Length: 271
Image 1: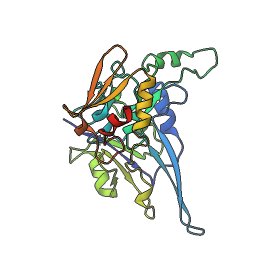
Image 2: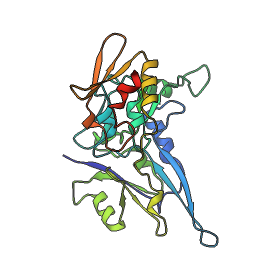
Image 3: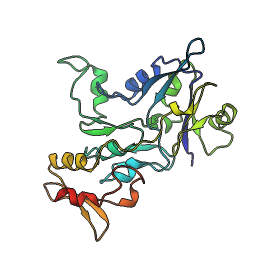
């Protein structure tokens, strides 16, 4: 079984946004929803000033926090390393979005269309795949990969800055590229970057603490008519909706060191 990953060569990326645009076209995402982002960074001073463009997206973690925290099993990781969301299972609770250390997830809650009062044919086709109030992110274009094709962003990059392939195959193009160009791995993921010679690794995406705490999570879930409690006996978080349906989250599934990890405090917050 393959284990898919991606390299982005920042010495070749011109910040043209072709990856951003083709991603939206290929996946038919709604206005305001983007799975590919571009960030410009600068370092040094004249006459030795430099800049680079850093594309970022879901980095398909080896141990995905989004999968571990999802109370309904909507987030899952395939055997080939691609992390996906089952939209039919997703309840839009945003726990995965808040726990993602790379800020790669986004709730699709925008009902707007690109043309006011009308839906273009390509929009209509795309919206069939994207249910409202569901979490979305880069899928490595798994529908193309399953057909033996490359992700759209890789195929369309005019600078050939993206390389995609099997990390477990020592003879794959991606492995040769990683070794030849000394690509830097994003910690705990299947994603790599090739840096310009004078660029610091500090500019690369790094895992950060979830930007929200217990109070915001509790308030959000309660605004949805849900209740969050800590079951000391089973050592699990219980999420219950108005219909009495209940989901459990096992604490060992949560990533150490993030703001959501001290779940025992939830019980005190609910009192």
